[in-house]
Image (cartoon, rainbow over the protein chains, first blue to last red):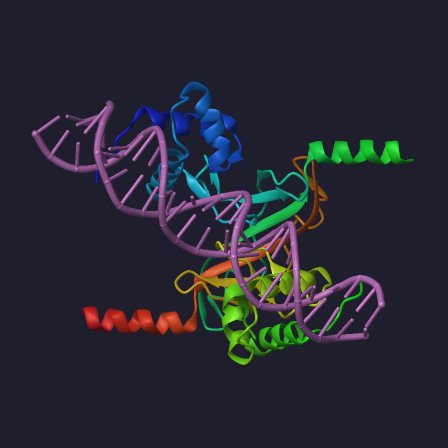
Length: 136
Length: 136
DNA sequence: CTTAGTGCAAACTGTTTGCAGAGGG
DNA sequence: CCCTCTGCAAACAGTTTGCACTAAG
């Protein structure tokens, strides 16, 4: 199983990295399609799967119905906009008092954890403020 | 919009509570069907939606393709078995050093966060150990 | 050349919805 | 009696897969 670097794969990777965002398969498909109109959505799905299995990108385990993919494979956490559903990176002092040392809870062997913040992103905050003004 | 307590709704709620687990719609459907063979999956979905909107149960925002529902509505976190995908409650000192006080990050207004532990549940640990013995 | 990767369409999984009829309050 | 809820089937969204063809190495 040698990994080939096809034009499609290269373009998908390039677009994901260039976006600096956490795109879904179909968002990425829309972007790649601009320069490769004949690419199929299935190819995007297959490549995202292959690339994340190879550790070149990361698959996000996160709220929402659609999977998202991350150009950044270094461990970090995410923040999720309740209004527009975009996902951004967040870095903070990743310390949970007490738990990281407790190696098992309820008989579980803990292998890791994710923290997912939820909130309102800057651009949605602006929109909400504008609405408030109009309403008053 | 008055909430009626139908037989179906009552049974769904009873089964979810009795399970002491975090079931998916179709797991719950399978259980309820035993005593109500004519119930439809759509009814289960609709009731889980209604009950969680009413705050009687909680809808989990968690990894995995299927939604899960929680009989326990008090805020707490979850641990997820990598092997069998079951979800259990976990309680710990919910303090993230520094972050809870920082009211915005990257311009986001943070409204909350969830912590999701991942690991191997007790019964899968046993199975894995058994496999190891057999392999050796 | 060999075999991983592609495009297409069709299948599949989980969830939602329109509708006519049932039954809770 | 009203109007929420039900069962059914059909629609839907996101993702995966079988197949014959293409192209990377």
